[in-house]
Length: 242
Image 1 (tube, rainbow, N blue to C red):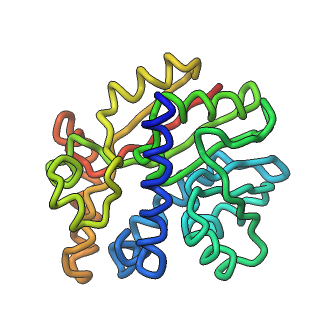
Image 2 (cartoon, one colour):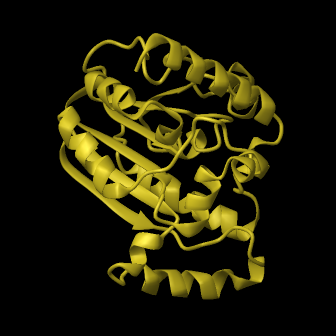
């Protein structure tokens, strides 16, 4: 990635964080029964990479929404974001957290410093190959990476990430995208990761009536087991080991 493009992306994401400050969690749709169900599932998945007494890095922590659940695992957690505005909200929400303003593509941490690197909906904001190389660098041998990211195969996500005026209306930043799992898996392997597993998941649509949650969860359990159809899920669970 050239210096000009890199700096442009960086400025764009900082400006995006300033724009979102105060409304971020509403835009990210973590409110309500369906949003909370989606949130809990992601926290549980990410937290499995953390070990009590280990050292972990959370990329793109934003307002610290996921940080509290990750801290409960008993790891030494470093939560970073490029947006000072969102970090200030995270510090107010979770005073015991360790929140630092750092670039996920150039963290400044030593080689092999972390047992785990995790994040929710962060990689699609970054230059993919640069970010993966940095994650690989700061992980210890045998260290785990876990992320949840939007799935470009989902019709809603595809439209949201590729139609500019819809992208802006939905609160996306100009540079963010989504992933097709086969290409993303190849990028992880090309970086040097082993045991890479990427699974489509999540058919819970946060804008549906909350009373529909029990039915949606039953349907989701079926949809995620159907070959081909499950590829249309809204998100991807990513596991990789260095």
